[in-house]
Amino acid sequence: MYFIGYDIGSSSIKAALLDADSGRCLASATSPSREMPIQVLHPQWAEQDPDSWWLEVIHATQLLQRQYTFDPAMVKGIGIAYQMHGLVCVDKDLQVLRPAIIWCDSRAVDIGNSAFTALGKEYCLSHLLNSPGNFTASKLRWIHEKEPHIYERIHKIMLPGDFIAMKLTGEACTTVSGLSEGTFWDFPGNTVNTRLLEYYGIDRQLLSDLVPTFGIQGELTTAAATVLQLKAGTPVTYRAGDQPNNAFALNVLQPGEAATTAGTSGVVYAVHDKHTFDPKSRVNTFVHVNNDVHHTRDGVLMCLNGTGIANSWLRNMIGEISYPDMNTIALQAPVGSDGLLVFPFGNGAERILGNKSTGATVSHLDFNRHSQAHMMRAVQEGIVFGLNYGLDIMTEMDLTIHRVRAGNANMFLSPLFREAFANTANVVIELYDTDGAQGAARGAAVGAGYVPLKEAHRGMRCLAVIEPDDQLLSQYRDAYGHWLAGLRALMCNGDL
Image (cartoon, rainbow, N blue to C red; front, side, top):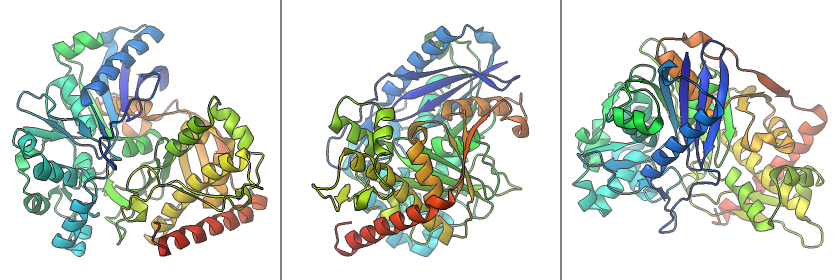
């Protein structure tokens, strides 16, 4: 039996075809070949056309079918992973009313901060486990305030994955995990948080109906089946935000386990069995995919917006050069980049900095000493140090992480990045041959009842284990200390 998984990213759409009996991925595809555009109409804004995601889902499915011939009737479920915290608004005909406000858009920061104060920090942290911050609920309030003509026409609001599920099934629905990532969920009450909705003046009816993370969420319509060349009636059986799904894809389901990614943004996501929060809401807690009434499973997420995007920016500035060549050149510089510091905070408001939009900073640049190699290394080290700064916050929450799992992709393809991460954080890294689309396909197999959760990861291979090196630990500890001192100086000077 086959299962298809889609990963709806802001850069591209990925698709995977899974043979659930063997646990092997038979085909995978990415569309488009170049990164999808993000519209930035004003500083700190970031929008995308949701219909463009659907178009690339169609293209990615066609690429799958070219890679591996399969009978559509043998596809028994579809899973969806998606970029978190976005906002899609549709009217009563389920037509998109405006471009989606996506995860790295920072326009609603002040709205969320005001709600945090007005509702009370103690209330928000104990009920939402987060500040309303720049999450989906605050973005919807921005629509309410700034675009009332749009708000009046909204029939349902959706996360990006909810929108793709709607295009597949014709039904508007969401999950508890999804509502929690938008700060719509009341953790102790185990229900929608009406107090925040009332404060924002948001009609609860705008929220879509709930479906389980694993289970039947709707069936492929004839229209969708026709354009995808799949079978009408094929069920959608799994849905999760990209970071909970990445953790699931890496078999990170139990307390103390952690997953990490380093694509456009970078994340460390650790599972906890208690409703916990950071008092400053610099890292955030959401409902994990395997949470149930008997077992609390929350995901504590720290996010660094400026990760792969910082490295790709540098590549674009340099010109025609490959990422592997950049990695090779970067290794020519020593640990710590001879004092050159990069603070990669140039991709919207950074939660670990209190939702500040600071811009990136290069510090201690010496024209007589620093070369291209130093700059390439300093960017990768700056990303790692930013992630480790978030890990320090998680440690303050009594989360102990000694081992993390990651897919063999994006920044983790760089030997330097892996070395710096393992030795700065003093953790063991396990790299696996999986990605978000494969995770979504495995989730679909579980949701369809074809594979039990405990067997969902059969066929997945560990490709490498990177352990801290005793000779490098102190070097990276010193380099991180230097970077941290630089960060604190920027904060004290008001530059951050």
